Image 1 (cartoon, rainbow, N blue to C red):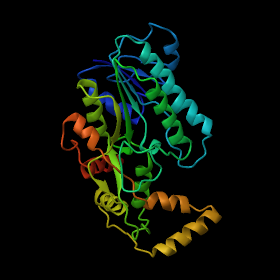
Image 2: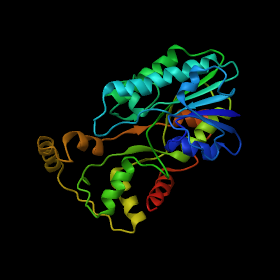
Image 3: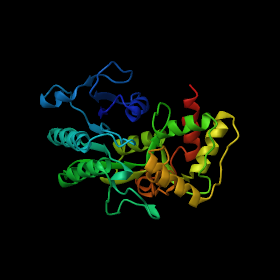
Image 4: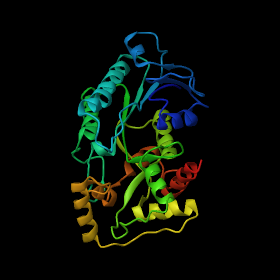
Length: 311
């Protein structure tokens, strides 16, 4: 196949190139266009305005977007300009391409729900909170409102993606544990779904090469892990003893409240994010791909990511 990947130089894009380039011809679309192994040519976004400059492709994987800013410093209009606007632009281009038959859009679990009671499934009524999730659901709705009958369109909603080369929140937590700082929230038992990038590559390869129904698909590993288990895995990787303190929940909630007043690292919002449950079901994508389990289990994927941090 000939595949166009937007955001090809990003974390997921780079992993997809490694996974797909041996059997497929890869073109990129990005704000930067250095030479990249496995990518024939990377085009700037302006190329979409000039018919015929991008070769005919069979499929598009749209990864480009603005990631969630955990410091809440980004203006809302930036999210909508990038996450919604660029999606509309590339999807309109896809609709005009006669031979391009498949489109994969990477949304986010946060477009469906900021918080989860029970297990998140694809039939949930979306209720995003904040411009990141809201801009992604706006992009989803544009796609769904303009769905072609003669092409295949897939909307992926991954939970936190990680793997070698990842520079996100998992890396930040790793560095905290590496410094020997005790984890004070051991009394909070929560479980979260993570997504190994190897499983992302498996799913993308599957929907591109198999006859898979169009639709929305959650993306995540088979098992959910608690933050305490995550801390323990980081310590195993570092060869350290885990220092998990089971301080009273009431004490930590009070400390978080005070932290909000004093603008300290631990505040009520951050405490909520660190201790909440967020479990997403991947049953639909596994059924569509005809597998009972994803190729990489949660702990294996996590260990691969943690080993890569040592470099």
